Image 1 (tube, rainbow, N blue to C red):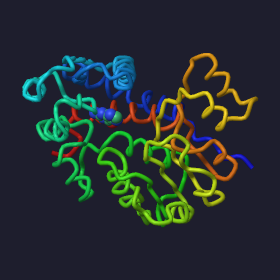
Image 2: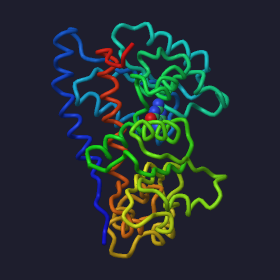
Image 3: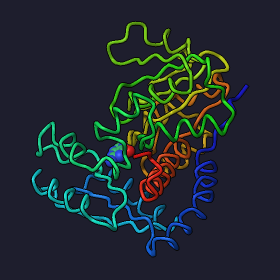
Length: 309
Ligand code: GUN
């Protein structure tokens, strides 16, 4: 049996349509559209692609998206000065600084920048004030990727209350906030990581398995209880032909995509898992579009101050 595909592209499109009247109402009332400032430092290829997607989706949804670029040689002080300016701006309701920052800025740079964003404008939910409110289950702007996962599960009628949820990956951006959101939806939550003993056996206890570790096709059928829901947060670009041939059968359309593009976007979940899982989110077309939809939703919430402060 093959898993039900949870179509993130379609769910994200539905959310964007739902937001449209509220965006229009805000724009009429305020005399300006909701504004989102995106800070992109340097030219990291993956970040360029993500930011382009955010810019396009935001503009299509009727937001004003202001892309502020800084060179890869920018100092941390320059990024902080730009964040200060956006904090003070009456036209920027939301601020997003694309992660990662250039390595030359030092290991703690991104956190220092997230710390500097006004929590009322923190559409990524990475500021410690936002994180604290999320932990306490108080109204806040929650990180977009895990919020998108919750929306997908909810709208696909996957029961979270009482479910055993296992998350592979403990990042601040996905794993930890994902655990909090699932907990607030009354799941019993386990976070696994690189030091977890017998990882496959722990994962195989899950009714809902979230793979967010960033290693292409790491989660194989042995990690998955038959019938479980599998959410694939990973996005890796595979350029090695042998790896593509290992992952996909000769007649798979993914092989044709690889031939055309010379690379393939692959999730953390091995394609064979689709034969075991009950429901699965694809890559591409799963969590990715949901992340962007939730960014738009958070920007509107920041603009209308529905985040509760
Ligand atoms: N880099 C990868 N994902 C994200 C995200 O959700 N927000 C930001 N700011 N940077 C990212």
